Image (cartoon, rainbow, N blue to C red; front, side, top):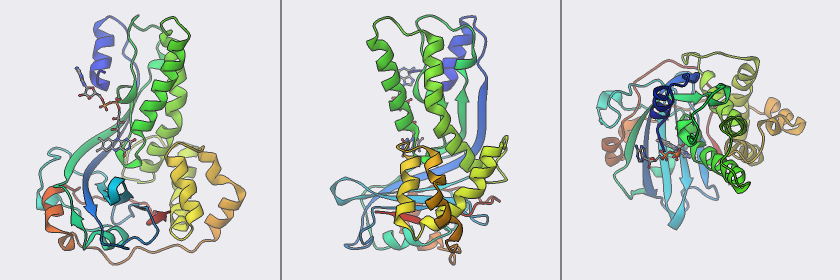
Length: 302
Ligand SMILES: Cc1cc2nc3c(=O)[nH]c(=O)nc-3n(C[C@H](O)[C@H](O)[C@H](O)COP(=O)(O)OP(=O)(O)OC[C@H]3O[C@@H](n4cnc5c(N)ncnc54)[C@H](O)[C@@H]3O)c2cc1C
């Protein structure tokens, strides 16, 4: 398993042309921690996702996991990624746009010290466009395409690629590199468009905005807003971001109608981080303030 960088260096050192790279710089700061929530803190919900807004380009997810525990991740866009593990107070997120996650964990028991991570850019290496490739070498997973982790897709994409490779190996001979890369390119396109389309909804993120990304940037925040009060829409979105259903399913006429007629939830008063548990603040390294535009509020799934 070579990293995205070393896989390309290896190809070039062997005398082959460098592959083209698509890159979208996101400067994500990411911190996660596990909690045991107070009994009934979430009702029947199992998942809360809070997207960023124009004023506060930070979001988070609270997810039910094994043994009655909950995993909470906070992330901010376009932060300082130079020292991702430094808990500098000036770099902490001031607040999330919606208070649902905060309310769920304010009286929760932290089960670990938490961990923080910096993620600079989504990168897709276009090996499928090369005419020549070294025999006996294939590239897979993050080394072909690394996606902004806030969309939670990377492991699924790597696993689907591994299944595609398994099918090719089952045929007997070593897979032809060109056929292999074309096949996994098809696997990568949807999650890449979801992640990059989501990030380009923020005007501060540099990148080429196609008609599809503009449509996604306009529609998805409204869908998220509607999903805040519509469990079926929330489930539909989670199934698409989890790569179970195709993105077009979100444009089904009945869903489209519910999205355009739903009232929009406004961001609440700030949830100051100073009111988060101390241990969380010590362990989390958040983004520096940045300007952005996005209007996805919290939605909850059951
Ligand atoms: C903060 C964060 C949160 C994420 N959250 C999610 C999520 O919620 N859901 C999701 O689906 N994905 C998530 N991802 C993405 C996911 O972790 C990756 O997409 C996935 O792990 C990629 O799998 P991989 O096998 O390609 O690479 P990796 O999992 O990185 O595995 C590569 C392995 O190769 C080893 N290695 C590297 N170089 C060498 C070498 N020279 N010799 C020997 N071994 C080597 C490494 O140690 C590593 O074990 C997240 C990523 C990050 C950074």
